[in-house]
Image (cartoon, rainbow, N blue to C red):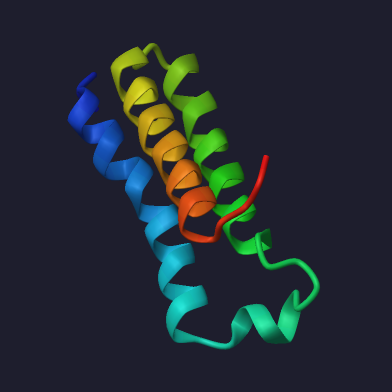
Length: 86
């Protein structure tokens, strides 16, 4: 695997996008975690953190940086769109 930030950006986008599509177009969140609306997104971030660990351990620091950027932007976008106060 190449050590390229674009690979990290595209790979890091997969699970937050999948979480958004699951919440937006299905009722899975209402059936499994109705009391915790942010749980699906939290799971997506945790998966990204696992991939981030593998990227850094294998020496692909640019891939890791791409995953960090996408994960951070996804969470900021969630906070803005759902009007969550910090």
